[in-house]
Image (cartoon, rainbow, N blue to C red; front, side):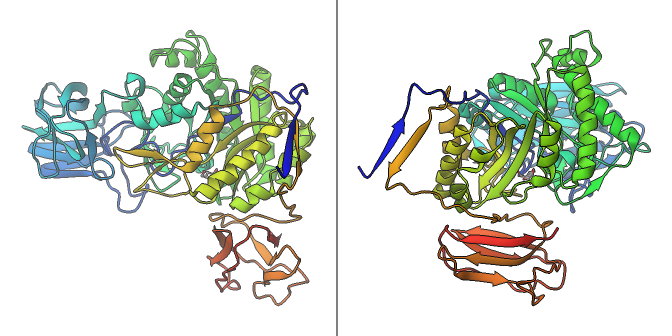
Length: 616
Ligand code: AHR
């Protein structure tokens, strides 16, 4: 052999925690509604709104033959579920579900429910798009002038991935929260999860579940409750909006450009984490918005309320059934505590001063009441794999428990940075690598990730948790890729990165055994002062980009039109950079006037050094 690997079984390396590798679930790419959340009816509560996405309205996904009007007035079901459908006379309503339609399997049972106010007959049936029955109807006799929930069971007579739910009324009635769930959810839970997707996540054997975001968490944090309408449209993700009976949970505008129902909420996240033996790891908004928004709240009362929400969340998860929030957990079906040990505050915070001030407030309130809880801080926005020095310095000085880092990079970056954590302070805050991925869904990307994970594991005394991101993508509604698990309405499949994650999670070691390799071993090339690249980040501003070959000759350089390649004078240039098979492509999305050209670097080798001055 031309190389030798030496492992010393007697040497004592770092212990590897069971929670080392986990998953990060965010409602991106329709991961929740139309995805992991098993509800088959789209826009079940008629709350879709043009604020969520252009073209949406209260009847999105529904067709009406007859007369029905989406109405918001005092007759509403409750203050959170404000719209309802006022049906006049005999009317047929058809819901088209997600992707090609509702996915149903021959002989399987489906639980239909509807809230109705008024007296008439309501008939629900599974049908094809052209109205052919795919089940016997269930007939409901609605009665009385008060909202009441009615239920029935449909059994599919054929398998289809393009079914419809057809609801016929014999006369006038008010309807809301029209729902159809497969009986066969993951672990058979009511208001449960789609079995194949939940099973794929469970098969990973994740050590933790980070939820619910991501950019989803912080965005909109500064919006206070819309008191006039008592309506949380475009409000940040707040856990109290997502618990209790589903018909009392509002829907909201999702950061990723669609409507989110909150049917999959904190109770369901905790329950799922428990079901798959993973540690729940909620992320709370810090009232400073990252993800390109760059705003911080100046509303002290709002900040106070969010801090109190954090304390209430710990009571919801861990408190006795006699406590206010523990009682709500018990009423939902889980009297036993969920055993919450860790919470994260904030996501990709790019206003370091404002974030830090808020983080300290959250942390001290949590620690004062719950010293046992680990509070995860933040390293700042994805700076393409750099050092995140802004917030890291504060975290180090303060002695934070743990710091959340994110990066999405080329496979080259992952290979070149295998030793990233070798140099981290062994006595400083621990690292939570909350989001990472090599930027494509090809085998090479997954191999680069696998190689990188050996570096995480080798540093298990510093890196305590890591999760690939994003987890799920609905093939018809993709806002971000690569992704770990892909699906449509009746099928799902794991990427090669899924297989890598599964391999590592199913084989978490107990302890690092120090090893060394000698001989003709390919060593990763160090890159000094280099940055990686992101396909998405538009907020970073660069000047004077230079790519050099391993021998030091310049492959590509760009002063972005300021004519000052060596002076490193700043001009404001915004751009996206994409990485394709190791080639860096500048795709201009400049809002300023100086970056006009699209430059492609044709050579494809991962040994290049990319240098750029980050000016903002
Ligand atoms: O994982 C997708 C997004 O990437 C997350 O929402 C955000 O935190 C990051 O920028």
